[in-house]
Length: 426
Image (cartoon, rainbow, N blue to C red; front, side, top):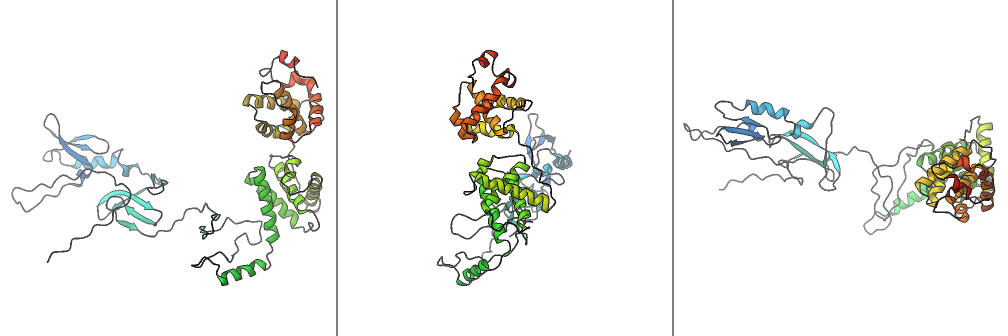
């Protein structure tokens, strides 16, 4: 009866490290049945005969050569070379170092580790199969560890646009502004049966939970509205978080009943922009405030400042607005060149030394108009008004105040005195 041949383990999907085959075992002449075991040093060397007929060994990693006559030199020099070979992958590892290799399936960089596998008896590269959670030897394909737990961070906190199951494993980060830190349990009512319909028990419990008392329901709605306005204005997350914090402080005093909620939220965002030194004009805030007027936002801002400073005893420090804070954004809207933007920035900085009693936004718009009139790409007053939100008449009046100081404001490298004389008079 034929003996069963042992089955070979599945080979890993990654390409194994190419190593030269071991040299054939030498048969002793005195006893043909006894085989001499080959040294493990030959796993990393190849034997060859040089031009002078000498037996040598060449490292398969760094190509360094050694005399390899076994009767004279033995293999100790070969074994001593392997631990210090600069090209040997195993020697690349240092204490605490986590090298990277490329994931075959997705092409991502994954941690690369080495281990001594019992089956192949080599210090080989270990491949991490993230889809199956397996740790596989790249030499013999042995699964060293199966179904390992991924302890890396969860970067995805949103669901797919389709109606499939939510692939998110964990929730978002804790929110200290909420009573439960945002870590409450929610009963899902998503479709989960075989026919695509909603589970009756799950949907019913989820409906009743949503109808139940939630102290943070109104707060979550306010945070969602602030996030929507911030996204439409292209504001960073720090400004959005600061606006949420301001609204939370005001809401804790319970004075918001009967007031325009949209104006309150817009005012919180306006104050947050000021405090983070990224100011926006009231007109810009008003454009995303869901119908709240400039006057309502202004009143809401005064109300919030009064609540926090007078009643709560907290100082509401808002940074001073400068024309330079708006200039670069306005220039970007107009598509101005880098040279023109740099000249406008220098002119705005010099204008602060003058006694020009105009708002910073009006000064920025007037400087842009003056700079563009000295360039080949002249901008219409109407276009500047649309980009800055400043009325055309206000820009003319501000330009009239700046015109006598044009020689001091405009950099000499941008325009000559002759060009300044030809500048249109107000």
